[in-house]
Image 1 (cartoon, one colour):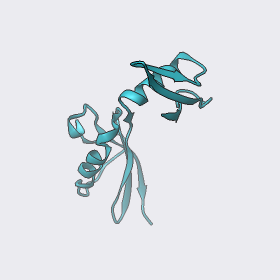
Image 2 (cartoon, rainbow, N blue to C red):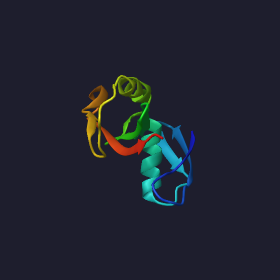
Image 3 (cartoon, rainbow, N blue to C red):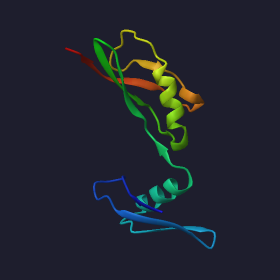
Length: 113
């Protein structure tokens, strides 16, 4: 697998392989890159950022911690079920989404013209 490390601004191009039962990472400039490559290979996670658009307002949202990558679509389906309500930045809209220990928090509020 090939990926780009996101641990720092360098953005090392990593190659991650399983060789003789061991995960080998090449292309990293530091130990954080190796750890990131192993994590991406074995159990990729993503912080979910999205938005909810209503007629008069758009809310930007994110999860407080990373979710397993394969469950992001499931989390998005839960977020889409949210009906309109008045919110402010910092409000928690969903606690423990998909039983992941991540909360969905409002990060922005845009009044639609």
